[in-house]
Length: 196
Image 1 (cartoon, rainbow, N blue to C red):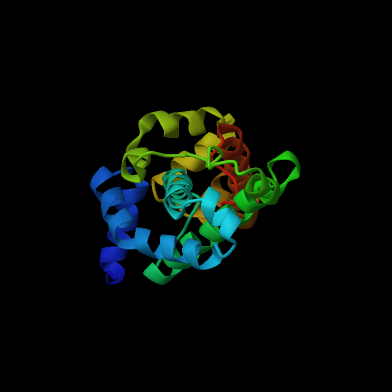
Image 2 (image 1 turned 90 degrees about the vertical axis):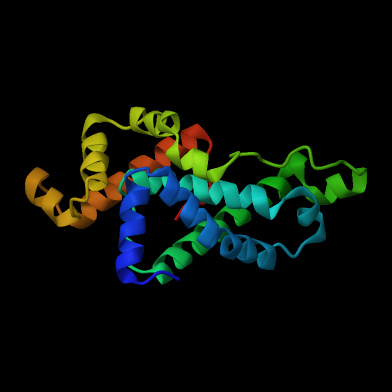
């Protein structure tokens, strides 16, 4: 794991949409995310329909988008691992619930012998997704003017307290406002199930 200054530099570069930094982060943390997913993916029927790689790509896509939009303040590798693990657990739980719901019940699929055509495919290469201006522009386009301003200022490294002093309100209220806005937008784009 990188030391504090290396980690801070890596996160700044990821926030600035540096493709090399995104690849470095994926190389360092992908195995950990996949391990969290595999440990929790105990149901044989779900293992047949869900793949740790697909969920991992969805986790990384959501993480990179939200980081570029300034949502996360991470100071240590342990905080990053905790966040990525939480996102992975939430995405896995949401996918499992979706597959068990109503007409998509995996128990019925297993009985009918259906194959894994329903596996979600949210991303191709997480590093490319992170660097994708198109995806970030879609996210930015879904924000209103004030939400976009908050995201842009956070991406520039401004603190929540600085923004609260400038636009009014509290740092906590502004953080929640941006988090809710990003939840809304990424859910509408189909990449937001189970983010932290």
